[in-house]
Image 1 (cartoon, one colour):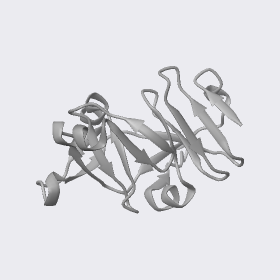
Image 2: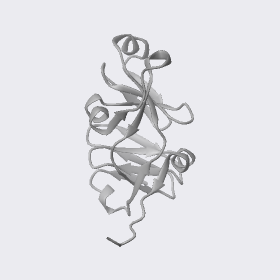
Image 3: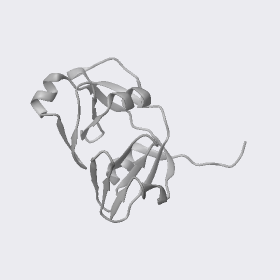
Length: 149
């Protein structure tokens, strides 16, 4: 299945809170030279620029996050530890939808993500990405609206 920014709004997204903290550090000129501005993620190769953040997830998977998005959406929880990484917590609710067949997400900026059957599509309004099912189950919790005040 092919998903684009035009069709993404037709999916039944539900609110989730990310409960897993994020281990991250700024990407440097040295990183850019070593990796040629590209990071292999679970969903494909992603470009980065100096100053973006290298995020490391619960299964040691890595991906880049733009500096502007990272600084607007994460709060630092602890001082730096090894390799310049520190712990961060997300500030905002994410909206997610499980996709039950293999899919690709093609964004207007040229980025492409590949998801397997059962993976989750995440949409924050400012960013879109894919999370593997097993990682999603360990990292996110549903926000249930009780309907009471």
